[in-house]
Image (cartoon, rainbow, N blue to C red; front, side, top):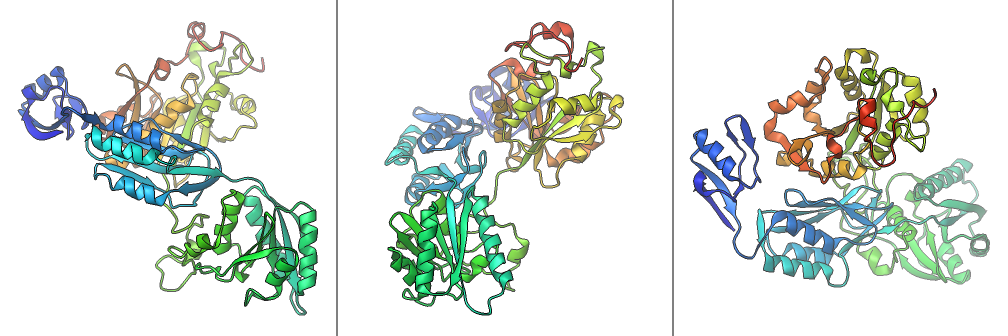
Length: 554
């Protein structure tokens, strides 16, 4: 790849490295310069630009990211469309992230141009949560390097995958000694139930008995007969040796002891055993508390059917210091807990969605266009909201105004929040202000969706979110079709204050001209981002079975 400062009249076909203004136009970095662009630059007095030109054998950044992501994509994972040399990988289900660290390290060692970053191994992830990102650093990579990286990623199967967490039946034995308070026992049961249910499982039974080997062994047998797939023993006294009472009870019940102790604090005194194929654990004392400890790390793997052997526990030491101590700058009690190994990972941007559904539909009066039914009886607003819910955007907030009770009624049961725009009659700006005011304080951005655009799919919204990266200068994301600007738009939180100040029957689009340097366009494959339906005439052209009809409830 040639990277140089070159005269504008020689830069046609080169990739612009730095954003630059050409008269009233802003040419963004990463743009492939056309003859029209270079003439506009020269007319504006710009004689030369910093640009990159690919050579024979070079592969563009997006194709590189696309090919490498396909090689890395494992089971129960999804991916974004390549943009600016980046592809994000997402969990396709609630599960545990499994990594081949050696291969990922080797892949990152192929060349500085190729990078793969992931969450920590064995992190518990939710559907649509970002688990990894592939970023190509320059604008192009030599095809020979890319081929090496692809081969490395494919050898032995993808280097990362998500192992689904499965509902498990768990049995709990609680041994007692004289003087143990009932409150301690009840607290242990509550903390264990919370852990198990958070993973989608259930406590099939709890058994209380004396702290004696034969008694504990008998209770273990009863729990297995009741269908327990994992047996937990909370001893009245901490385990001091493999031959102690609770471990001996596992052996007496026909099991074996696989490992005692772990390099995780709290959690040091966990004991791992097995009775045939049933895991049997003696819990450390810290498991009586709901706070993160080594037991959590083992339990999540067992729920995902990931084998836990002695070597696996020995490898948990790096990142295993979980104990809260005074000298830490952020006490653990105040830090967000997570169920993965190592420090809490940085998550991807949290993007909310506003669905503006407050308008008076004056052009279609007396009908309310949002409530017009299609041939199957579905109102337009339900299609819009269902499409938004199919995306990664959360939370989804519906802004109501005109005929608010009826709008809420047709959306009943959907996972959305409602906010009412009291001054909806003032126009679109009132709905926008009400929606922005209702956003949670921790969201990084918001997609503003219009209630009369039912053809915009969840996949399209996900593409907008994948392109959002304020740190890389992409703070406002706009969809386009064949170069024409459309909706919905994604706005970073840096622009929320300005959005709160808009007035009249307009949205925030006029703010684009004030921030052209951070606007990033995402080209879509069809015209859904251009099509709204304001009139009965427009509805006659509505595809996918939607037809002109009457509003629900009339």
